[in-house]
Image 1 (cartoon, rainbow over the protein chains, first blue to last red):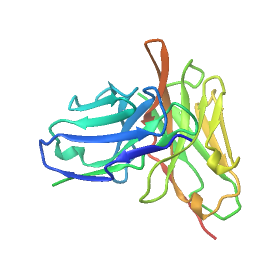
Image 2 (image 1 turned 45 degrees about the horizontal axis):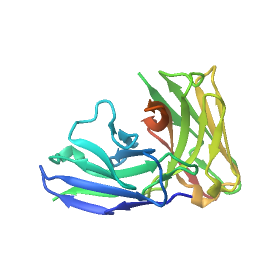
Image 3 (image 1 turned 135 degrees about the horizontal axis):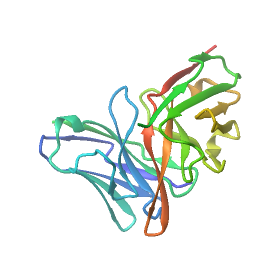
Image 4 (image 1 turned 45 degrees about the vertical axis):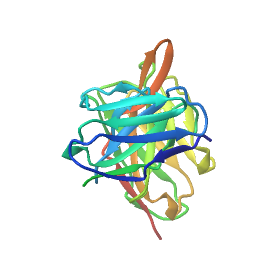
Length: 107
Length: 126
């Protein structure tokens, strides 16, 4: 099984700050990586797919990138509504696996 | 407009079979590349992928559930189903279904969950 190591587990940041969350797969997943945001009591919402493609309707301050085998989600100019838990998902090889999540709070 | 909604028994006893239904609109599971997945989340914990079914009836399961899972679909009625046999308290969770959206980039087929249902809570308790 492919393990997804997501970091940090939690993060406190200020408004307008730049935030970066990373996912490190245990093996190559060839850009089969998507990012989701989940707010309390709600279902996850797609942010990024195919590692770098912004989902429809998602603000452009969100972006995804890959450096070597590591994948990152970047939020430029953090807004109040960006708080929540963020998950990555590898869709390369079953069993498909989520990262453990990053809880993002406002400082 | 794509929507999905899960339904289930709410509560069931250990050793029973959990039957979940995902009723969706705005897309067809007979369309090339489309699919539906099931994901669960125990209260306060992370997401766990359970199973996917594709338009061509291809199916993938999470082996950690030790062959307890069966995913199926009814294309005519826009529904997908998940059964989990021999449940125990560890199966207590919110269960989500989500649409699998395909995309081809540089001749490579990718997929992801683009629309999710609101989830249905399932409690296993004696």
